[in-house]
Image (cartoon, rainbow, N blue to C red; front, top):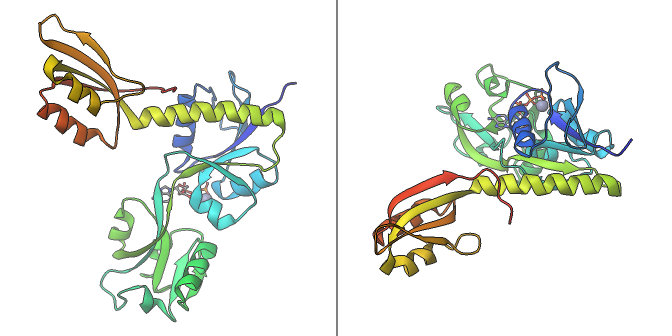
Length: 286
Ligand code: ATP
Ligand code: ZN
């Protein structure tokens, strides 16, 4: 049988959907209809293993899986020997310290001699040592946010995304220790065959990520402003310019980066561009 690349993905939870969506956008079909532990793709040489996210770094280190999709927070906490290969752009969150909103504590220096509840003792210990804060750590595996209210701890160190969980638990964030997103990690000793499959998967992942960061732009421009408008929209190589039926006008097609988007649109309008259409791109190969 020819080689397959074994990918570890979170079985259920916050990373499951994003992981499956990414594989689908890469054109890799994986049907997990029957809640199985492992599923072979029908059209790409990969086999997906569905596991608890906390176990993924160890499984990748030990070559039970070849690669895995997992939060950077877990990679840092578990400290296994794996390669961090590519950020995946989903599962974004931060690991923060939070304290009771109306309590006596004000800042992280007030945590000296206090107790902090967390599921991330390794990352928190490193942070406290760096900041020379002598606090004790109370490790709990879930529902960390209720610890101060039930008297288990004075503060917490937990994952935050919108902040709504902190808010409903009368906590406020005072320090961010780590910004995290899902990353692709890999075993350090992949065979040549597996590396070739990984390269092909990475090529697809990067095309999907690039497409997400870019939009296709179509607009009508007066011919005397084409030079300025084209300089605002360099695109992948250069913009496409097509004459309109109306004399003196052209249609300009290009690609624009999501982060520059609003600034550039303002300048395009100021230079007489009309009928601006912004269209999502599905894949981008350059
Ligand atoms: P498992 O049963 O697999 O151990 P879990 O309860 O540890 O699941 P989830 O809550 O599903 O894990 O979170 C998985 C990952 O999703 C986190 O480790 C983190 O990387 C990411 N994540 C993104 N946003 C958040 C958030 N607001 N809270 C918690 N995790 C988040
Ligand atoms: Zn977990």
